Length: 210
Image (cartoon, rainbow, N blue to C red):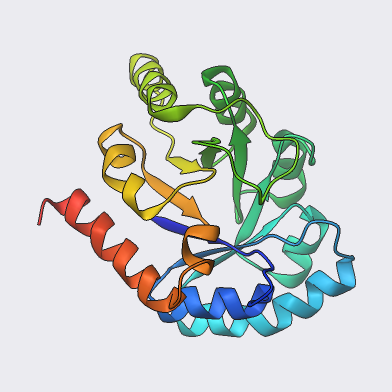
């Protein structure tokens, strides 16, 4: 599973980057527009939502829980300083996907109890696309969290996030994560659409043993 997280760069805006990922076959877009106004997020969703439906892709908002049902996007991802997952679940019900950011096994347990559908666990390494970074996990961090989840019979999807590059995919998937979330690894390349295709092909080979 590949999740693309939008990010503004000198070359690409939020929508441009998402379109490149969609054209490359990405089926999971997280619209992350930190410090944007609700109206700016609404405007972005108006452009992106029809494209995601055309590509049969999931569209999540980062934060902005109040807009999820209003705009009928597929769900929301909540960081550590956003609305608590339990409160978001009460507001949104079971119709919408809710993901949460985790850095430790205890975070994962807390999110599962609160009703999360998946957890974005990270960061794998340093990334400059996020402020107030949690402690770096590295590959051993993921192995430990995956092992603890198995021992506790927790089977929630674990999505690795934070500074992930194409060369990290095999190592991360072998550590037992369910997928990866990337931004810069796609947007910094000469051809983001082709890079997205390459990442998906690599993930499929690892997953299906092709």
